[in-house]
Image 1: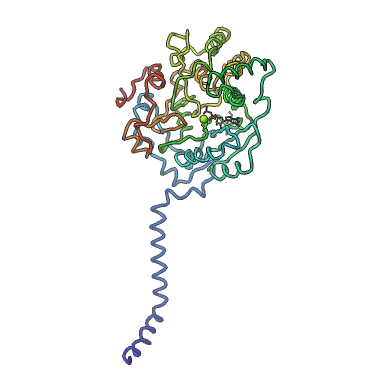
Image 2: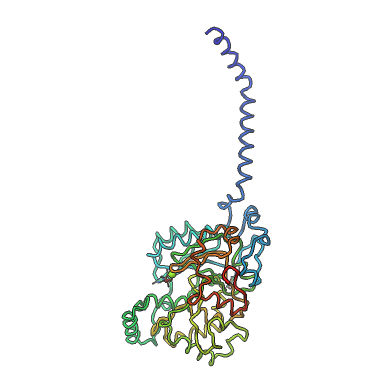
Length: 409
Ligand SMILES: Nc1nc2c(ncn2[C@@H]2O[C@H](COP(=O)(O)OP(=O)(O)O)[C@@H](O)[C@H]2O)c(=O)[nH]1
Ligand SMILES: *[C@@H]1O[C@H](CO)[C@@H](O)[C@H](O)[C@H]1NC(C)=O
Ligand SMILES: [Mg+2]
């Protein structure tokens, strides 16, 4: 006990003597640790400080070197390049049409798009509804979106029967389509939705501020990282309409759409592009419709395409013919036929390497190196992009005179 007692005061004295040195060494050690930690993880951390229209240097550094990205075959043959990040944003927004009851099937869609793309770019997001959005809907979406979330109500005149529609005739059609078990055949709201997505979403005042949009629907998934700004990509590659999946329309929903389109072509020949992509939608030089259309639940496109006099005349012509209510015309075949007639083939873009799901179908990149580079989580066995018969990606490649990837040849 004695020796110990003797030593105690001495060590206590030593600690006391060097206390300031120990403290300073400890502080220096922690500082070095923090420095190492933050410089190593810093590139994925700065999101909180980023303002919507600017990127912090760390982010733009992480997104630079686009020329190093491996291209899927489709991007090689479509002859596109990935834009370098200059820290500037395009004049673009996400846009979603939804009901309040869609909230919890939409949260996952928004989260997918944010995680795989928008967290790096902070584009705005416009939500549109034929009724006012609930406080809950607005609070949840505002929390999820990294840009500014905007909420718009659709004016009644954009979501109602035009006065030239014969209500009895329209009701009879709905009854008949119900008996024939045509999907959404007896729905009034689905018809308003299709007419709205065709003729009005791009006229909503909240969209006046933008030149580009990306349409997002409830229940979709994105399977891969998108390593470049898709809007800058569209602009710099002179693209006007981008899609992923393309499928065949159910003929019973559009019996007279092609005849009506042919009449429009006769009356407005000045609107039809000489060098167009009509061969995507017709196999016989325009005589008949082959039912191919871009699946419009995913679209990255130019708003000016729909704002053009050609498309306004086309929509008015179709609307007067009444097929939204006397049949069940969808916005997908209408967008596709219009784009095919009013754009040049080079203005279309098939987005590969992104991986996409909307209830019904999955698109998963067929090239393994692309799936690995883009950190895709889809099962390539589920891909229907290159399916024959019902699916139309092959038709698009044929219309553009391009070779399909060797994996699916
Ligand atoms: N506000 C509103 N949105 C709708 C209505 N019906 C459909 N939508 C939206 O329109 C888009 C297409 O509808 P959806 O049910 O996904 O149709 P599907 O993909 O053809 O089966 C989705 O974004 C829906 O949220 C409606 O009555 N009101
Ligand atoms: C964005 O596009 C809209 C519609 O074309 C236009 O009115 C607006 O001036 C553009 N804004 C910018 C910043 O370019
Ligand atoms: Mg849908």
